[in-house]
Length: 312
Image (tube, one colour):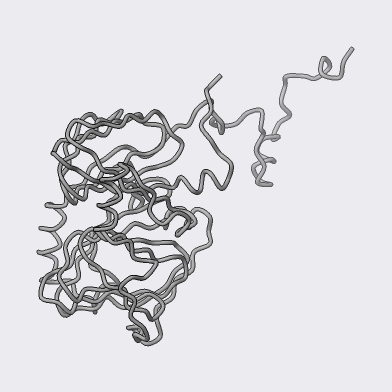
């Protein structure tokens, strides 16, 4: 007779209570499954409108200044229960406003960051490790991990952009570091209008018109993937279920997104949509020319060796 056959089904009194007292849990009697056949995304697809955010930021100027706040921004919080910050599992996006004459003070942090410039006049720039990097509408500017950075607007027009960061990923990995610059505003020691950190909108536009979809600064941020996508009217892309999480921001024209568990949404310049993992979706150009930026955690999945697999 095997040992298994001699086991009794009667649990000794106090057995499970004793396990709990020692921070142990029986793997044969888990309270809930901890593995499943295919991904089960907690986050949901959602849309944010630039017009709504810009109006709210304009109103906030009356009572929020750079002296009061680290940044005058509006975070795109995924509308799921008990969520207060992430836009999707590993990424967060936010609209930000810097008024003429303002400087958003310098800091650095372990999360990687980038910003997509929506509207800005002349003399708007970011300062990265002491180098002034000019920005203009359509630009995508990188701020790699632990680089000092601050933002100034010395022109006469408000500057609006979208920030994207991997803060949720860094929080989950518990490797968060943050530091304010000791001088508040980092001194400028150089000026690089054509910095490698700046991906000019005009260059991206030219590449999109030639090739449709182009990678932006591959490897520039270790955890965040970037693409620029150009579409003619009626041109479409269909995407199946993916393990990566994606945020799209429209930079020109009008784009129709049809997303599983969301439906159809028509988006214009500055609008943002998040498509968490494991949702099918299509992208269709609705103007003579439309363009959008894709921000994803795809490099993380590739670096860790994860890939989509067919469920058994």
